[in-house]
Image (tube, rainbow over the protein chains, first blue to last red):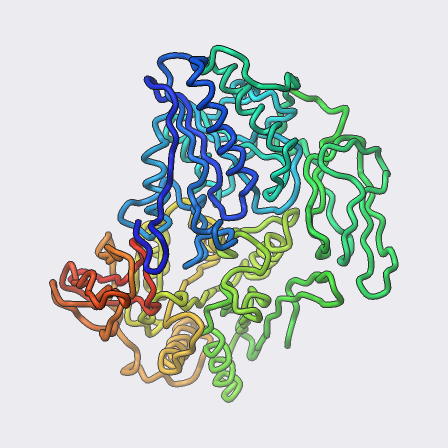
Length: 309
Length: 308
């Protein structure tokens, strides 16, 4: 697509192997999803090597799209700069519609017929998640294959009306098995974080039968726990102010443990000690220095509940 | 009487609150609510809220019932010239009916629905966005058309658009209220970030006519002033999207009949001096939307025409 004042807008895809359309991976759809783009770029590099060595299973095609939105990333905007719309709220898209509907439509046309679809996602709630696979409960969701990533959790969420225009939801409606991968922070391009995400993707590729050899360096893999909406205990801020976080996503906490301090921004006094309501692991933690009153700060997965493996 | 319907503390010594003004007179039990400012860049409703209340208060003894006015559902958005809620990703009109356990925005949405529920009529006033100029119109989903169109006709708009509803629109304020039995009319007029006084005064006449029809306003209404709207049902609307990117230059205006093939404007290149595309009306009809913001990308909406 031509732009009035900028370079031509392009979405690049990298194809590996040929045959059955087996896997499509989509990286950044928002301009701040650098970690997601980096993971896909690293995956492209790894798959190139694997293809050269002949370790991809014959008869399968893998498509990787590191960025669906380079225009926003280049000017450090999260959404489409002209009208503030979110490409991930435009699916399945409309080829005769508005600009981002057309982008979504063009992208979806290229990725909709794959057996598996992976989106490197980020939430509308800014913060840090324990690495997990999220699938929307549409009636078509496939929890078993979501465990192949070997991540600690699979979170099965009931879609809200605004979720019906996301890529994950529409992939499922069009018969693909769709997974959104959450983990780390959007801006984290550290070697360790990148390596663990790429390993997760390569683990799935191997276990789903798309590569002959286990080409991931770390063998660390979990007995995945499946979580429903109600399995997470929400912790909100009783007062507003400076939010000093004492635990991070992935940390274990005891009941009554102080997990954050809410500090008066004028007088420096601790207004509230935020305590964990239960024993468990921090699943989500807000990543902002300030909080409003009653805003969600953490989600904790409580230990000792009935958990399905 | 001013009442706060939702409040919370902001991080640095400031209270966030959503307020309404309640005007009550007589013994009538009916309640009509005027809401606006869900999108912080839509300001037409601000003048309408002012003017409507001013005129009601000037002749308060003619009121029999309760009028409630909520001018700013997204006060921080209006105050910071942002369409959405600052620091929140989702469009406020896509998170209804809200969630008391959710983010501040979702909690606010839940409080708004709770407060409006049970009203005899809610009018949700929008004014397009900065991109499009709209004639005063009421938008109604097909499912609620039977109940709402007769009421919408009293609002003195030029146009009523009955459209099919996408699933995502189930998260609008109007849908949430209509689906729990609180009749809600969505009004669109003008353009974002500006106030059109002519349209505003026309809407105020419409609002007074509506409460008159509901038996809440004993004042005289000059029925000759009330516009008989064009009603668009069953996919009669043609969308004109930009076939190319560039600057959309137009000297035309909406609120009129255009002929098929008539030029609506041009997409031009300031760099080369060329006309990239001449934009022509795809059909004869009533031009109710025209693009106001010149920069356009392929796909940007340029015009909407109700086919005649």
